[in-house]
Image 1 (tube, rainbow, N blue to C red):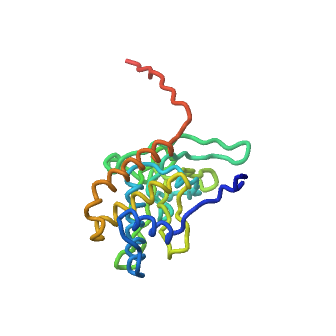
Image 2: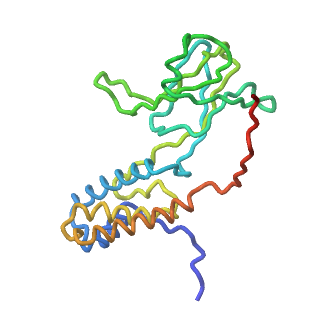
Image 3: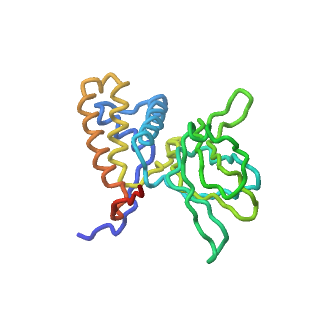
Length: 236
């Protein structure tokens, strides 16, 4: 018999929820069941963001720096920055120069935050992304020091980890690579077992399965470049 010659298998939210309910020993019967599964799925992907770096959510971005301006908004769905440099020039003449990340305590102790020059330090202000009572979105921000001394010279370039997209309305496929599907289904089954009566006696088993699937998936979803360590020379 011939193979299918296709590699397009995926699951939408309905398929994922049905499989998860089956593992709990029950069926998805009502619209409320689907809403409950969607809510749990969104909470599950937030749990993934808290567990570490999800490689498929890493995106490159850049912000042109303006003379005298210290603070700049990041995209609202930014979780954190992983790498960052200050770029000078463009094309074949561009150079990416190191900019060091500092803590809020270190940033607070800088005597004059309005000094100008090439930025060499950045404080990443990880705001919530929520909208406050005044209707202002609390975007994550970067605050550079010194403040840029020119507008046509510096660009802040970065790699960020963004939020995993929401579950959707039932027909959407999840914002994950195919290799994470077994972990996603196992995690949703565990979350649902905490809510549906039929799953009460399966909670421990489903939690163990979820953790095993997470270990397998997260071990695969990692950087595979070689790591080289070298001793640092100190001058006394």
